[in-house]
Image: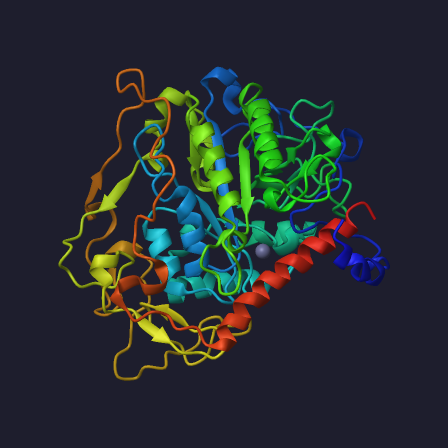
Length: 512
Ligand SMILES: [Zn+2]
C-alpha cells in the first residue's frame, strides 16, 4: 500500500462505483458467474467473430501456436520515452529476422509529433490514448487524438485502430463509442486470474459479438451479453502473478510493485514471477503475455531522476530469456490480431503480410520530410509552445491542438506544409511539396524477411539487448538539441505525477 495514497483513499471512498485502475489490481475483476458469458463457435467464426476462450483460435494445438509477447507503452511520445523503449526493443529480432514491433498508446500532452512519425515509419503501431489523458473519455478526446496524430504526425487514419483508456478507466459507453467510430479494438480490460485457475478470465482476444467477458465485477452494465459490438475486439491485459498466486496479482509496470507481500520492489523477485507467469502461458494454451509499460519510469536521462539501471537490466534479462525459447514472437497488437484472424501454424507466420519487414525504398540522398532520419534531416520544424514545445514535419499550428480544436491552422504563412493525403503512406509523402512519391501498389519496398525454421533453422528470436540503434531522439535529425524550458520540464514531471496518482487511485479503489 502506498501510504501517500491514504488521503486519497478518504477522498475517494465516497465514489460509488469504480470501473478500473491505472495498472494496479488487488484481486479478480471478473468471475464466471458475473460474466454470464455464452457464445456459439458454430455461429461466431473467424475472421470477423471470435468467442472469448482460453483455447487458441482456429482449433490449433498449443504446440503450433506462437507465444506472443506484447510490449506496450502508454502516454506521451518524447525523447525520454522512445529512448526508454529502444533500450529494450531497439535491436531485437523475431524468428524471421525482422525487427520486433510494439504498440504505443499515445496521449498528446508533452508528445513530440515528429517522433511519432519516426516511430510509426519504423514499423510500430500508434494507438489512441486520448488527447489529454482522461478516463471514461468523451468523444472529442478520442477522436481529437486521431485528428491531431493524422494532421501533425502524418499517421494515416486507417492505421490507428486501437485504444486504451487512461487509468484503464472505461465504461460500456466507451466501448460503444469506439465501435461506432470504426476502431478495431480496445485493450483496457484486465485478465485478472492465472491462466490455470478455475474460471480464469485469461481469454484469448475476442470480439464483443456476445458482450464483454472481462472486468465483469468492475464495469457497470458490462457482461451477461453486453455490450454487443459485432466485430469489435477486446485484447485483455494479462496480469502477472507472484508466489501468492491469484492473490499476488500485478498488471502494469510490475517492476514498480513489491512482490510476494514484501514492502519494497525487488528486481530479483519481479524477474522470478515474470518468468513463472510467462512459463504458465507458454506451457499451457499460450495466451499472449504482456509487458504493459509507462516507459517514463524506465528513462535513463530524465532530469533529476536517477536511471533505474538494475531494473532496466532485469527487464532485458527477462526478454533475453524469453527469446531463447522456440516460437516466441514480440509483436504489436496489430500483428497479433492479424494472426488471430488468420491463425496459421507458427511455421507459416511469414504467410501473414503483417509479419514481414519491409523498408521503404527511397534514395537516402532525397530530401523529404518522411519519418526516415537521413531523408528528413533539416526539414523538421520546431513549434515553440510554452507548455510543451514539439517538432513536426507537417507545419507548426497557431496553437497546440486541443479536444475542441485538434487541427488548428498553420502558423507559418511563408511556407505551408501539406498534410498527408488519404491515398499516400507516410514514408512516401512529401509534406513540403505536397506530393506522394508513389501510390498504392506502385510503392517500392525492400523485403528483409527471412525463412522461419527448420530450413532457416530459426525458431528463436535474437538481437539480444540493444544499444541504441539510432541517434538519441533528443538531437534527432541533426536539429539543435531540444532545449527544455523549465516549463516543459515541469510538464513532463506532471505526466509522471499523473501516473503516480493514477496508480494510487487504482490501488485504493479496486474492490470498492
Ligand atoms: Zn496513460
